Amino acid sequence: MKNIAVIGVGYVGLVTGTCFADMGNRVICVDVNEDRIANLRQGILPIYEPGLEEMVRRNVNAGRLFFTTSYQDALNDPEARADMVFVAVGTPEGVDGEADLRYVRAVAETVAEIVDHPVIIVNKSTVPVGTGDWVADIVSHKQPNAVPFSVVSNPEFLREGSAIADFLNPDRIILGSLDRSAAEAIAQLYIPLRAPIMVTDLRTAEMIKYASNAFLATKISFINEIANICEALGADVKEVAVGMGYDKRIGRAFLDAGLGYGGSCFPKDVSALTHMANVQGKHPQMLEAVMQINADQRRSVMLKARELCGDLNGKTIGILGLAFKPNTDDIRDSPGIDLARMFQEQGAAVKAFDPVAMPNTARILKDVKLCADSYETVEGCDVVILATEWNEFKNINLIRVKNLMRLPIFIDGRNLYDPAMMYELGFIYRGLGRGYGKPVANGHKGQAAGATQAWGDWNATANNKGK
Ligand code: NAD
Ligand code: UGA
Image (cartoon, rainbow, N blue to C red):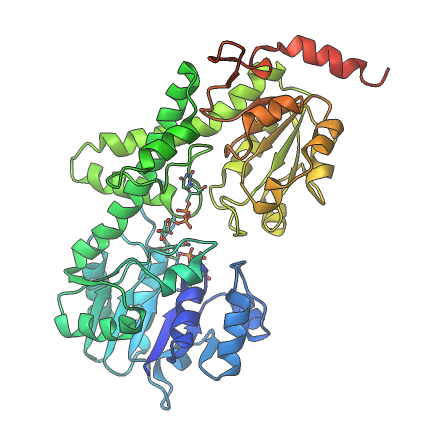
């Protein structure tokens, strides 16, 4: 049993603290956000993450998990001095694409000023290469009395929406430090997880995190580029991805073409790695292309809508899904949110729905009609866009959807539906990279009705609907 302090109770900190407590440690989580801590003390979580609420409650009740706004209580409780301090504060994108380290700096300064005993500072936030050394410098300079400490980099690889399972079943644990015994002490903590543990130096550990996220983002942009070529040539990217994935060297994961990557990590991390390279006078051309392709995917959906429906000014657009991916309430850099803004700029009225992310959306999106469910969202719409592949959209009543819409233009930003079925139901359907082929008499694939029908025809149909 270790005494652990976790700093920052966001997606990573709260999951990390709760899982360590569940593994039998005593964990105290500290955050500067007083509301978050007050709510957590009443069992109200600041984030939506499947399974987390129950796990927090169980560990609080067992007397292993605590929440505070006081660094003093978190670090120096005489009954339970923190042996290790996990830092899990945000590292958002700065103005030039760099990682903004202001929260990491604040934590380093506060820990240095307050901790009164030897401690291992473990960095779980995603930070630029060299940050571990920088943190060590800050701590040394800010300590009122020299107290021994070590810095370990322990990047986190969990995904939102499956965070607990990812944390407890990691593919690997990466530990970077110049102090081998500190890295080994942290390794002990992870031994129950039975994952490979790699000990390396600080900078290499920090780079492993960026390289991993950049590689996954590259896979997504790669398949999106293939999707665009598929679309032009009449191939189906979904099947292409399956066919590629059988090759063990390639793998099927992260080859889902669509609106591209969003969220609080890939966008800012690819950008931060690019910035690091540029500062060193390198030319990270592939990373630049990855970001460009990702931005283009979102724009391509808006262009598809315009192509099918003409001028978007005065049209009504429905967006299904506002979280950046299913099973989270996180809307940071979410394609659905971005599209809502893009359509508003074109003069369209936007309606939207998400099963979980509505409260977060209401805080940032103005003049978007937030609806109670999918059906209210699609009612009277000229175009509906599926932006997040929530399970509940998989079994939506598509006939009802079509009957509620003014024009049956459906753009499937996550390639959730079968194009042939959508055509049969009478939609003008577009996925991304689906080729739009459907079997014709001679056995070849040809243009589907949805692909060739002109906007004018559909507009006439819609205008005649009420007659
Ligand atoms: P978050 O924004 O959800 O949470 C950060 C928390 O830190 C907030 O509650 C904030 O109030 C708190 N905080 C800020 N300054 C503080 C201070 N001085 N003292 C105490 N608390 C403070 O962030 P997140 O999504 O959990 O990400 C944290 C880090 O982990 C980032 O570097 C991110 O890149 C990395 N990461 C995130 C994920 C993910 O899925 N979200 C996965 C792996 C790694
Ligand atoms: C990602 C990584 O998967 C985690 O390993 C990492 O720890 C985390 O970033 C981080 O550093 O914060 P996360 O952003 O939670 O996790 O979610 P992912 O499942 O990776 O999805 C990211 C985005 O890519 C989503 O918008 C998703 O819709 C998109 N995506 C994912 C695709 O467009 N296609 C795919 O094939 C896979």
